[in-house]
Image (cartoon, rainbow, N blue to C red; front, top):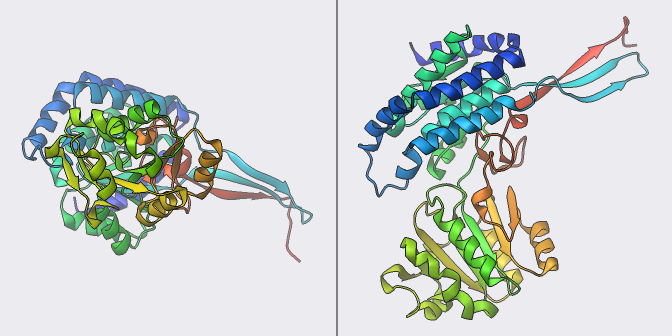
Length: 415
């Protein structure tokens, strides 16, 4: 089947989706979650073929990996999505006009949602569940690195759809080659919106090359600012978690910003990172304070490239600032507008941080690892939008809807 044939089938399948009740949709997703777990061995076998082709030092290695625990976690998220209230048919606005018109603004599916993503097989299940629950058809273009995993996942999804007498055209898995990506970016008239998930290079390529509206789920260049009023014990836990929990994901900490008044606390603040072999790229002040107090083989002097970089690995930059204004300036110049955090006990500082930092998620005294659809109560996420039009932050069911106006009258005509 050619790419264009898949796009045509996807567009036609939108009619299948509008005829499904929420009970139908819920049953499919709940059965699919059970089937995923029951067929874990099949999924893990397919994933192993992909893992064997990737170098373990590649930052994408952890994202590519499936485990029994991760499969069960994906299934749990799918059950959560299945049991959430449908976002469709909601009356967003209603009014009667002097002209005799009665108007309702009602939520509806976007239609066909295309997603281009890299080595993340969980995305196949997450995107399908969110699109299916919100009445959308999904067109998925994964990377070559995860082809066996994605093919296995799509096969299980389609078998489950067939068991429920639902057309399997509501999910289309494109070949993993670049030609398919180019075709998807040019599928105007078939695909309604395109969402890239992956590296900044992938996102830039899609934004610049697509004829279809794009929702950017941008790279995460994430900062945490430790204020003069910061609590050291909280800071130690937060920095360690934000950097080491899953360093290859977009909400992981990239740069610790430290108020110079707390420079003496820096060795204790980052000490635990050495247990995970985190390489620190420290500016001059931080390097001088850490020398002899942090393993020398893990301590490097920062370069200009250390800042404004998404490391996706066990590597972190440290920037020492003289005051709050310099911290805000550094974030503004280097942030990707994804997730930013402050560690502070001074409420005025926290409120100012919330007010002045421009990011999709802004935290106080909290690990940025929480920037995740499931953690935000959305069931799962189709991506984390760093733009401001239509959607921002973790995108769940509501963000996969549009609306239309329903207009009724008793024969009204316009004079």
